[in-house]
Image: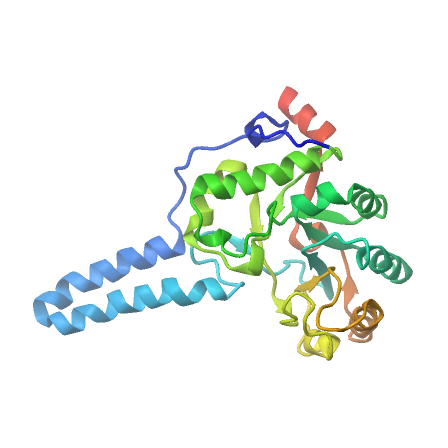
Length: 290
């Protein structure tokens, strides 16, 4: 199946907006640093370096904190004020690990969101259809999962998002949420997300499983301090370093049962954050006609 490369601007429901946008927290911080720099320079040039150094450190460090909306708005928690959480799975789908995961989620009556790459969605269309048929959501996780996408130029990032959207359109939907590869958000994402109309979503609870390389104790790391409105990050690719799929499924089952024991209901991500994970193309067409 050949995937065409037109811009998402030509897909129904996509309405590119001007690149002009409100100031981000980073831009405000930069202005404040500059405002403090000028009078401090007059008093003591060495002191004047403190706010500038603080701003530079913030730009270098804060991208590694997924809950911080420093460069652009990022959703990392729900806002229900109820005892519920959402499970999200990155990097799939995979024919070895995703189908048994879907059976496990069905057994628990849990709805999840899968942030899939366009490349894998194209390769495993049957699994994408199964995810949709079972009522789960699908978000955009770029096309190739470039680990350094956060440093690419705007056109490259837009192309990665667009290619995945093109694949999704063949299944009759468009993603509305974007999770960046490796969860790091830099200023490079601001304009591409503005152009494509997607909302950045990260997470508030993760097991630091390194893409299913650290399976032992995974459930314990998630369940420890798990709170209402948490967005949980997991992966649905096969375990690495000699661990089998069943060991990983046992850890996911422990998370599902452990959340219940804590009195936390597992709900869909759109319920948790109050906005759609994706939109059906037929609905997008109707929106365009109005």
